[in-house]
Length: 424
Ligand SMILES: [Zn+2]
Image 1 (cartoon, rainbow, N blue to C red):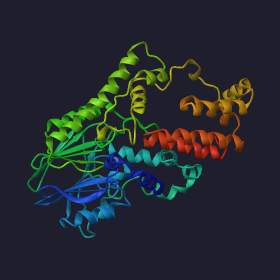
Image 2: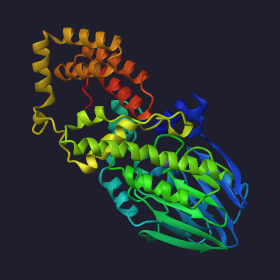
Image 3: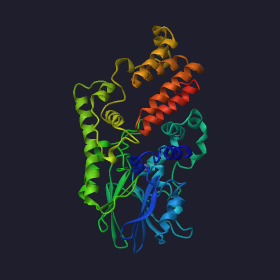
Image 4: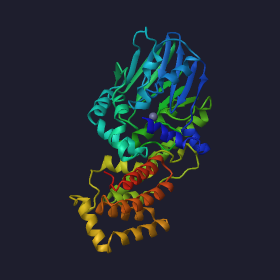
């Protein structure tokens, strides 16, 4: 996890907009007896007559700090915890909030969550590699050094013990907690509304940035159901919102509604345009990506800081289409090394190919430049000079990217290329 946090720290404070997404702070009393604190991800504690209802719990390694923050305001035992999703930054820190002598609290989550933890166990090496790449990691980070860290977050120390399907209403110490299921960033996602306090906890369905509905390396996201959930949350007319990432919005129902509805509109626009393009004769996926106009907004909560619109198009394509790109030769493609060698030979050698890639890069044609760079290193794996030139091209590409995902995957490609490796 170290490189995950370092990556966020590197980007923190770069601009006021990013500070919204990377906001850390608290505890803040956001409504009477309701405390919010955030460190990478947020937790919300509702102080009821019967004890604390805690929404989310942070990363395992940050749980103790989040707990200390919340405990500045209430020492009451945790009566119930609710996990908005099974991701490591929401469901893994609960043990730090529990007193050693106290009985286990109710831990409420959607029914799909245990299957997620089983998947983490089954694909631990795969997840280690893709998380290293997502955060700009090197070959070494992808292949080994995160092993110890990774083993600690295959499932939480205190797992859920109450599973629900579509909705459950909890009544604790005079307060009501509506727990609603919605597939969004994950298939096990929940959002929580406390009507007596007017407080909404959307989890990562709202993160002060373009929704993480496209993530290139991760399992399916559900942008269309996500948009529906945002509208359902707005219909509750919350006064205060305590998001999965970024700071809270306190006692400003108009702003909360605007943020939820505009984010829903953003997702719907991408989903509708992608499906319209698919319905127009089902063109290859790469054509659809270039046909969908990504909505632009100057709203601080709709900036592509983490994920981005083009990747959301891809996730819609994956769900409603198959795995095939639609490019005929890619139905049963040749090995990439063999194809690259053909192109290198046709272009008159790898030097000429890279000269052209560098010229394209100078002209701002990063997409074309990197397509040629891939061919060069795939044809010449192990050639350190080729690797260095390819790495330079990918570092320049990364500089021009806004989203953390694109920037870091390109930086990771550069790290592989430095070692003469074509991203494997
Ligand atoms: Zn999160």
